[in-house]
Image (cartoon, rainbow, N blue to C red; front, side, top):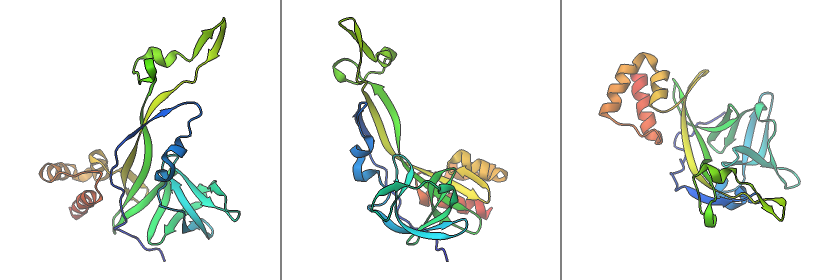
Length: 222
């Protein structure tokens, strides 16, 4: 029997991180443990289309891939994600939607709220003079230099900005929308006027599960 955990911990917003990236930079190693969803690999039950299995798993927020530890204690990426229906870790439930790993953070008789966590690259700039970030297009185009009549490839370096991101989704049957104002208006198309009035009187932070649940409950009560 699957149990829904409606009060699962939601990661709080963290500050963006800018790092200097060259051709040999291992971005995953830079983020190290902070790139993982779970503090450590945890035992999970994977409900497949035809069976179920147990494995020690974790989810990489940077690459958005699910990893498991095999019998040889090697960390491997899960390849057959299309066969996975539900992943249960204690009372927390996860599933794949369009190859994205989302947590079911709220469940009601009418719908569900899902949460996608990721560390996403939001900006990047090639280095200019003195190795400082530059927004000019000319810097981007320079990737080699003439040395003694021969062209030598440069180690093209950029400053890349990464930041944690939370995206909530509304789901009902085969209908899925991002849980923002536009998504709610499309999800509850027949209640558009009431929703817009509600949002003016009681603003909603669409990065906050409690606020989203409050709006969902209002919509379902109409």
